[in-house]
Image (tube, rainbow, N blue to C red):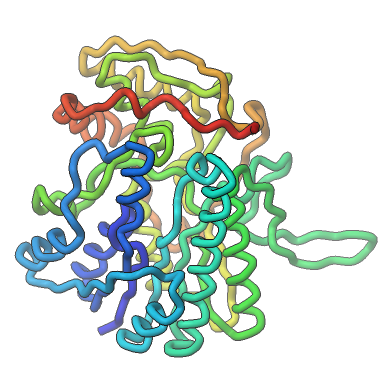
Length: 384
């Protein structure tokens, strides 16, 4: 039985991932310091519905499935702690979500920028060293982000670019132009991991993920207390989540700027598919492999109109309002990222059109009384 270690198991993606692999028959353990719940308290933003503690969800999972998930509570930025975890568990696959995930949070001030970089980069470095010390043949599946690339005026390849310059050719990592200190931390991760693959023979898959949406997976639906978090606030929420909540609350959908910003999107069920595909088709020793993990591309305005149309099906009349953009980003740009690799390996996309009304808007309607409109409007500006 293969061993899977999920770093960041208490998170939006970490918990459903742990259940999925447990259901598939893997021996699963998870690591978390529960810091995300503290960051939520700090900014005054909670998930739409209360999420039970990780320990409670683990107990419920065992009762529902008959399978155990082991939990290590601690911080991966602590070298001694993470070394002890790896020495004890010795995983075959390490799925790494354990980072501060918010661009706005990282842009609040000096302290948040420094914390994001120190937490994310040093944590990943500790994980890499622990792997090489205790399970050097293990496969690292690392959650990256499409935000590493920015919006270059060329097509975005999957991590690598073949170039010709002054008559010479080479294959180099695709140039990065991230849009926040958070996204910069992910770029540093990618470079550090590639270096360790090249020098030490580490095997790694960097999943450059688009914006994830969705509330439920097959496993979360097995019991009410197996749910994962759903954020719609200005720090940890996404534009699509925000639009869905605004539609249900009866307030205008808040589009930043002119809404021309384009991004890749995918369903949370597809995230689990992609991680499973990467795990079952591991990188070779010394290979730093990059998959662009998304299924559809939308502009922000297109998203807002989709939500407006979906809300109309439920009898909700919704307006769209354009706000001054708190971020510094191109609002009209070329955007043609490639995502062939995962599709070739068997990814079967779940499209937003099949998820929006029944799986998102209706469920948010059921929790309408829990909506806090005070946390929606942006509080962080990129320009000082």
